[in-house]
Amino acid sequence: MIQSAQVASKFTLFTHHAKTFPDLVTALRNSMLRAGVFRNEKTAEEQVVQVLNFDIHLVKDFRGRRYIERVTECIPIEEKNEYTYDHRKEKTLEGKFDKFFDNATQYFSKTTDRKIYAYRNILEYVDGEYVITNKISDKNLMEMRNNMNDEDKEEFDKFIEKNWGTKASNSTKEKVVKTRKTKASK
Image: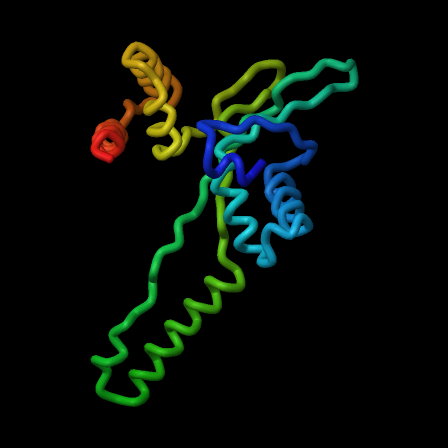
C-alpha cells in the first residue's frame, strides 16, 4: 500500500484499526520492517509519513452507531541543514573545538531524536456536532487546489476564509500556478 501510494496514484484509500495517529504510523512502519522492505526504522517511518496526508478515524459507539471521530492531518517535518561550516575561520584551537562540538551535537540530536512528522486534528466530533479545529497546512491546501476546477477552487477558498478566517494565500495560489507551469514544461 505504501509503495503503490508513492508512485502511481493521486490518492490511496485503505483501512486500519489503530486507535491514535502515532499508533497508525508505528503500525505501518513496523509492517514495512517485517515485510523486509526496510531495515532502518527511521527510513521506513519517513516513507509512511510521506504518503499519509490525512487519517479519517471512524468509531462505533455503544449503540452501534458509526461516525467520524476526527480527521487528522499528517505534516512531514523537512530536515534542515543547520550545521555551521565556519570552523575554518576560527583562529584558536578552542574555537575550532567549539564549532566541532556544536556540529556534533546537532548531528547526534538529528540521528537519535529527530521528529519526522507532526500531526493535528482538522475536524473533530464534539458533543454531537463536527467542529473544525485546525487549518489544513498550506502544502495540502495547494495540492487540493491543484485537483480542482476553477469553480471548485472558488468555493474551496470561501470555505477556507469562512472557517479559518484567512484567504487562500497568494503564495499558495502562486505555487499552484508554478506547479502547473513546471508540469506543463516537462
